[in-house]
Length: 400
Ligand code: ADP
Ligand code: MG
Image (cartoon, rainbow, N blue to C red; front, side):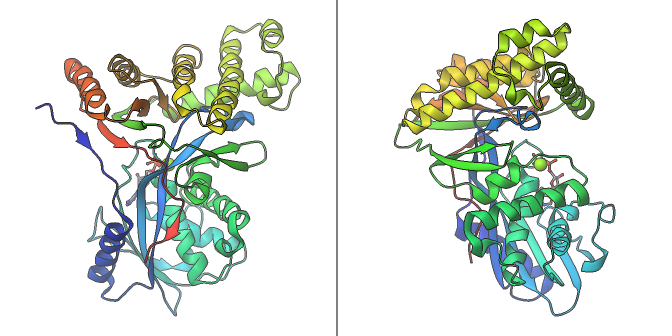
């Protein structure tokens, strides 16, 4: 009864074998190779991307695996372990915005976006398997795109990954375009940048103003720490309108303050005095203080003090809950219970209204904290959460 549900990451060998098995069973041939791309979790810097801010995500050890074979014709065939009987098939030239309605948009989208960017991608087959939980705010969508994009880049000689991090940055933009236009999901660049540019033992400081990045040391094991991800399995249908309302408030406040984005606000008190609308004041206070918290966490990671970031994680959650109003009862309960069970700091992560929370804990406390959170959910009669250990893993790569 007290058992907690932990989602363990697959090794590269296990993921490669699973994707290759699905490929063989579906397409009765050997794949040319298998590519993996991780999900991600944001350590801090929430709702700041559209304000030109800074965020600090890391690549999860949990990845999506794509077994892929290049074809000589223009036929694209796609299958996912989620529904192995349903093979999606169409000519590559028919992949376009509005033309793919199912999950296959996430796997087909990169082919379209690479072709738009001038690379002659032709037909291919891809079989997808994943240990990234879907729709938990851990970016299973970008993980599919990035695994397939890296495979096509290599199989069709587009040459992006061969150019190192600059090439990966360009590939990330291509995957963002695929998600925005083919899958029709509005998303900033954090997910794809982390999946393609993340690194083991590091968090990725991403400047949303110019897409520049810097890897910061985040070696949890060396510090005797763990980062526990709590998938609340809650999804409140408020999502889209609520996002638009906040984005609009930020833009209106920036216009009133005479700045391009809220990133440029240097004197928070003066800005708050200049704004008459209480809702805009709350939005500005969240965004400006959150960007400062990201900078403070970055300084601590640079100084190899990940143990000292707990209070900043707590403050981030409180700001998102009280000022920005994007938390929900499940996220608040997860954070409160994690803190009560000894977490050094905890916060919701991702856009809010459901999805996941993170807790920075001492190594060895994982079972106790997870049980504490689960008990809080049980007491309210909610669906039990799932737990993942978020040791920063490698960015997208070929695994076979
Ligand atoms: P998140 O990226 O946070 O997991 P999204 O809503 O952006 O949530 O993306 C989830 C969608 O991505 C799923 O509904 C599905 O369409 C697609 N997806 C992700 N992983 C897979 C997979 N392994 N197989 C098929 N579709 C997947
Ligand atoms: Mg997504």
